Image (cartoon, rainbow, N blue to C red; front, top):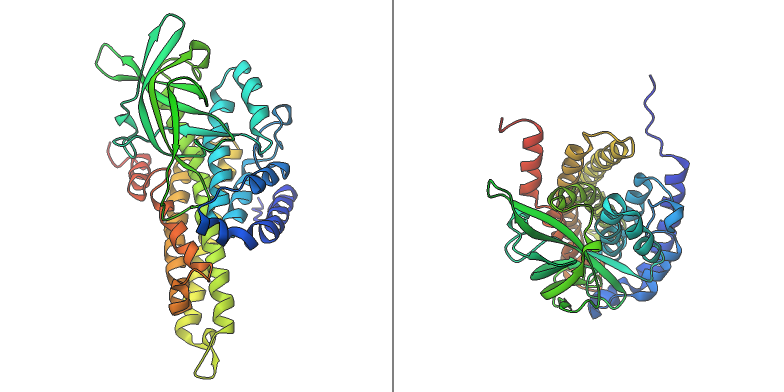
Length: 387
């Protein structure tokens, strides 16, 4: 049997299209957006026009109907230029649209999804709380039923895309009771922006992804109708974990793209910068740094694409490989960006050089969508280490 590592024509087309868009539209303004901590409605709309907001959704919901691999490659190409724009697309697709598409009722899909594929509206994913990040079961936000409504009280933090004026709403995990054995019952709700008792605030002064929106969400006697339950009562925890599995692929893509972009900046700089009469790429210490970067990036790409292929094939073991890919790609990006800054020397510490932004943007990749420590725990469980 032949094993082919050639990408499908669809994926190659997406790579070429998104790379050209990112170079032409994002690269010239990424630094200014970062410095001004400014979200770009124009870029978000253009990414919607390109078909990136809902890229894996069927056309009946306004999506592009492409494979998850094509989506992952699109995120990779965005992150190669700018982590903020990649974060907006990745969070909107994996965390925003994903739960509604995979777990929502037909009415919920028909109501929300067509609005979320144009780049004119965004959706948030409310899992993390001040005391519930890596411990997804530490949720304290509660929902109590009264008649045909549920009343939500609690808060969420570090939620991407959830407080900008084009946000349409967020998926919120709550506690809706306990089992006879005393275990918490988790249920997710679709809470629209503007619902009474719901307030979304933008977080500022971030180290990274400064042109992406990060939010705090507050619920004070927030009334939502029973029709806004995502799936069924008690399915919330499963829905969140399943969403995180898929989201790890997109964070892996961000790590891979970040590493690729940093490598290219370092290689270009090393060929141009001269010391002792010749380009610094001629010195073995730098040439070996660049060679090691290239090897790690290629290994990361193969692992991520395999994990995504497994998902596209409907293979259950994809979640183990998704954790592996997220872990490896994020840590490879750390090593590559660190060495890329080293090659730049003092210039790598100046905002005039984009590698400085890559250095900051990378840091979240080992924390978001499950820390590196949590990924190792997930992988160890899959290996049967605790049985």
